[in-house]
Amino acid sequence: MGTLVSAKGIAEGVENSNYLVDATGGRFILTLYEKRVDEADLPFFLALLDHLAESGNPVPRALRDTHGRQIQRVAGRPACLIEFLPGVWPTQPTPVQARAAGGALGRMHVALQSFEGERPNSLGPAGWHALANRCGAQLDAIAPGLRTRVTGELAWLDAHWPSALPRSVVHADLFPDNVLMLGERVTGLIDFYFSCTELRAWDLAVMHAAWCFSGDGRQFDTALGDALIAGYDAEHPLLPEERAAFPALARGACLRFLLTRAWDWLNTPADALVTRKDPLAFLRRLDHYAAL
Ligand SMILES: Nc1ncnc2c1ncn2[C@@H]1O[C@H](COP(=O)(O)OP(=O)(O)O)[C@@H](O)[C@H]1O
Ligand SMILES: N[C@@H](CCOP(=O)(O)O)C(=O)O
Image (cartoon, rainbow, N blue to C red):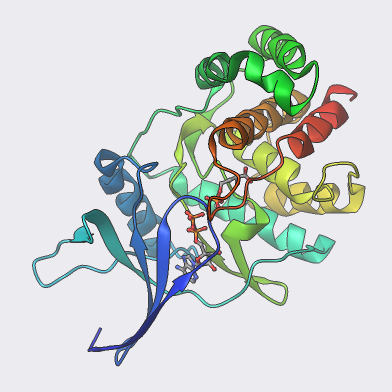
């Protein structure tokens, strides 16, 4: 790494504190893990990054110190120094970029077939019930009738969740802001701190819900959706049963982000430094999939 030249905070992101670090030996990202990341999960996440990078995926590794340790302690928090990857995230993805991103997910899923780590998904179906209960009647303060709508959706998902589909470790949060690109090439997949063992096709459903709508969720872009799925399918063919279950998986994805955003909306002070994300943007996406 050499010696430090400069370090500056990166304002993007809502989970951890990140710094862009320039040293005489190169450029790095210093991540300080804040309270949402359980320190006990870090060995799983770091082993996953190593496995994916070794398999040729554009995933950044955490550096090791001279004792071989990846996890350090900085300012009282667990911290890692992570490889810097070039690129910027696509704020308005094109179909060609969506196809490339779908392909990157497919290749990652191929590499994950030989990854042996496991981590339960705390934001799977059981977690949605728990989170909905914790939000409780306050959901109606976000939008009148939201609590009843969420309760109905949970019941529908309980009855239709395709739990027999193949499982794998998944990224679980591959929004455009977690994919770095240079032009039409994917140069980085980052922010694996929700990754967990889940229905494999759920990863693509999360991406579909995140990539293929206008930011407010009012408009679905068919060309983006088709390109994303075609890109994935070319690298990791979807099974017929995964295709059939896609609307249910996407409804589950929308409910997951609706609920975490609702919780943050209700519990983040309006003057906090993080931007609260709109839960209703995922209710509108949910309406789209429910109408299929
Ligand atoms: N390995 C990396 N290489 C280059 N930039 C990165 C890397 N990791 C994070 N970043 C930058 O930091 C920002 C926030 O990182 P992210 O992991 O998404 O934070 P959070 O977990 O808080 O959401 C990203 O949008 C990106 O600009
Ligand atoms: N993608 C989630 C929020 C997770 O935040 P990230 O900055 O860690 O990607 C959402 O949009 O609700």
